[in-house]
Amino acid sequence: MYNVGTEVQTSIKKLCDTILKLKNSNLKVEYRPYTEHDARSLVQNRIGSRKKAESELGFKFKYDLEEGLNKLIDWRKKTGLDD
Amino acid sequence: MINKKIAVVGGGIIGLAIGYKLVKRYPNSQITVFEKESSFGLHQSGRNSGVLHCGLHYNPGSLKAKLAVDGIRQMVNFCKNEKVDHDICGKIVVATNENQIKYLDNLANRGKKNGIKNLKYLNSGELKKREPFVKSIKTLLVSEEGIVDYKMVMKKLANKILENNGEIKFSTKIEKAQNLADKVILKSKNNEWSYDLIFSCGGLYSDRNYEKFTLKKRPLRIIPFRGEYLKLKNEASNLVNHLIYPVPDPIYPFLGIHFTRLISGEREVGPNAVFAFKREGYKNTDFSVSDIMDSVFYKGFLKFATKNFKFCINEFVGSVLMSEFVNKAKKLVPDIDSSMFVKGTAGVRAQAMNNNGDLLMDFNIIKENNQIHLLNAPSPGATASLAIADYIIKNYI
Image (cartoon, rainbow over all chains, first blue to last red; front, side):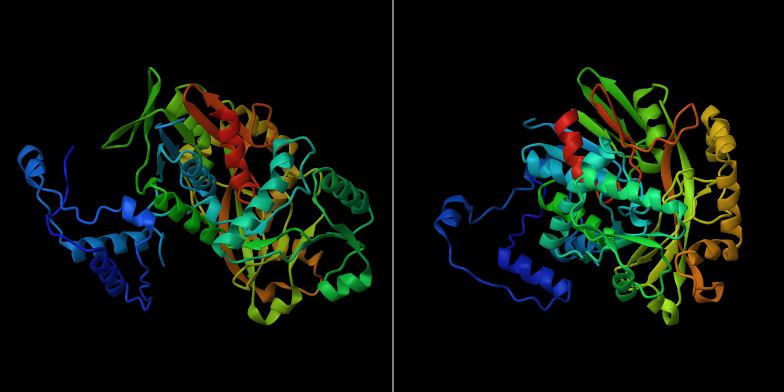
């Protein structure tokens, strides 16, 4: 099992805000309190170490969050999944 | 069916419907849809007239008849839930001469047997209100039918697959398959993947995929028939309000030229049915030597062409001469003329034919080991796609 990532921590809020910014969206984020179910299942912090993938697979990340999201957004447009 | 790896080859509306049903039904399995183009539904699924068909024309007891009514109801529900543009505007089938009346009555009986509700003959006042420019001596209204944006349906299906942990590999053409013990290895030019089960929904290439994947002789052949549409200019669009169909001529294999209002509001007339010189060729100059040889040297084809000589010539003339095309449409709406039209879109139907030159009208599905091939899915394949997916999953997995 390998972690594939950047070791840069990203909060859900930051991820959400970045997507909305890159999509030029005027959607508003709706915040709700933690439910019991959330509290049970949600891991609050998760940062995968790059070490094993780097040393054993030679994996090096190429894109930061914004570049990666932009590529995803472009792909979704190109494939017709998004307008 | 827990933790299986399943692939669907073909990202048209039926491949996507199967993918969608699989991710819902088997959340612990790993589902992948392969599509050779850079987007989904670029051929038959995205190039039809956008009609929601019921079970009016199909032989009672056939698979088409069984799935058509469930199919349209599932599709309409899906559109409602997913906010896909559609309109159950109803369709009329129009008898324009005395001879057609008995065929129209036959259609109504078939429809009833197939489970369509609210079939009704319109009197002249009702017809005038609905379609004031249609000339008819007897008119059947099928109020359950309508129009839909199939591209939007496919977009929703594709997104649902991804949201439920499925995968869609675009621009990936599967060239070969290999059966290894209880696995199927799918191979593209540069890659290979192993699956427990595959579905092939190749549309215009369903027969060739069957041969390439199973290494067996294909039991039927896909003969491509191009269908061309003309678009009514805006100033003439008041001549057509909803869907207007002729009574199909029983000696001809297709439904006949009809008028359609598209979801965009535009009005189209078509399609004709011309033997196509290329499977994915949308212009009448498109040409593929291997596709032509594949049809012409098939022993069934010569038999078909001999039996249907008049039909073939007629349709070819209609393709070359716009006036001939318009003459057929004029039988339904006499006030139209050639000046009211511009060239519209075109599609190619994947129509299976057997050795005897008979067109296979029903859906055709074959299972070979861990491969399930959908070999023939002509109209109403798009409307019935969700019901076809259920049927195949239930009966062939």
